[in-house]
Image 1 (cartoon, rainbow, N blue to C red):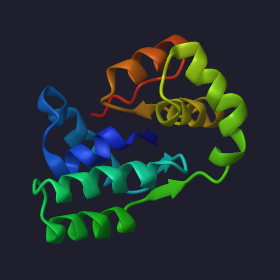
Image 2 (image 1 turned 135 degrees about the vertical axis):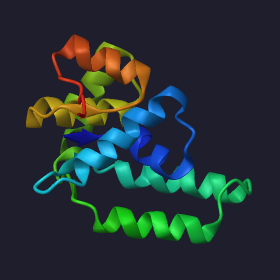
Image 3 (image 1 turned 30 degrees about the horizontal axis):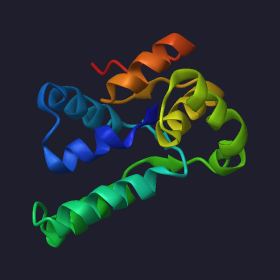
Image 4 (image 1 turned 90 degrees about the horizontal axis):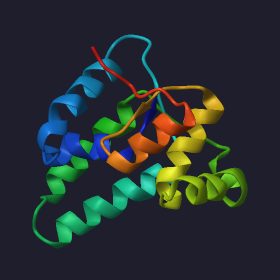
Length: 140
């Protein structure tokens, strides 16, 4: 699967509302033997940005963030090495075509290139993925 930051961050912040159950199911799917999530090179920056903002606002304790980051480091998450080289070509084109941020388009680009389902809570990215022919992860 391609794992969007929206799903991973909901494991930490518990703020996904109706999507929390989906995020939990993705977490369980990732915990199964042989499972793997691929993420674009921008993924870590998105995670770090949200954590830093939440800590600065007092909504998140550093100790909890550290435990979460350690869990992510131990998870079967593989960073895509081609994200950067496709940023100014494929990713910007997908961003234009589907009116996505470049960050969201990087998940779509990776899912298309790797022919993997996408795990996301982002409504616009879900719509774009469907239009582009990318399957959305439906965890059991």
